[in-house]
Image (cartoon, rainbow, N blue to C red; front, side, top):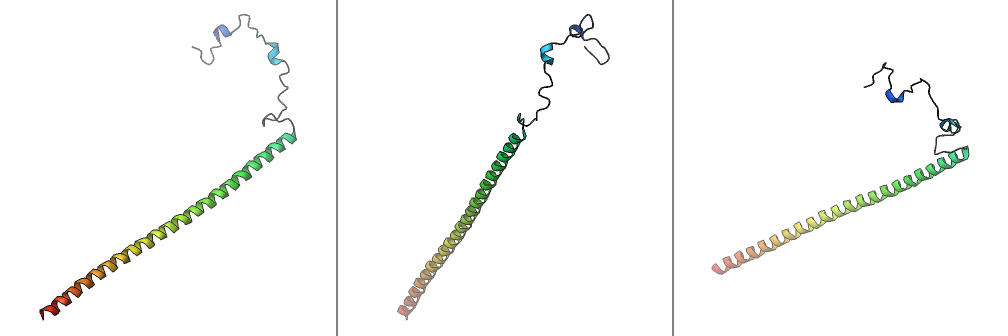
Length: 120
């Protein structure tokens, strides 16, 4: 096991204490150091086109977000209208039930009145 300060690297340590470099690794090693890191763009024009593309995509997303917000608002209005329609239907049902009860009470009242009139 290697520890800090051992200075023993096993088979990785050359026997004559010389380090050999493979030349093809170092061949033109600094060629890529001057290039910008953004997508391999090597001039200002490419960066500008990339920025414009990102701006267009952001604008498209903004438009899609607005459209979604409008659809959500429409759905909310529809839900409110549906709730209002349900309340109106419930109120109509309640009124219809009251009318039926009133009609039943009138019939009972009329029958009692007739019954009283017959007995007299």
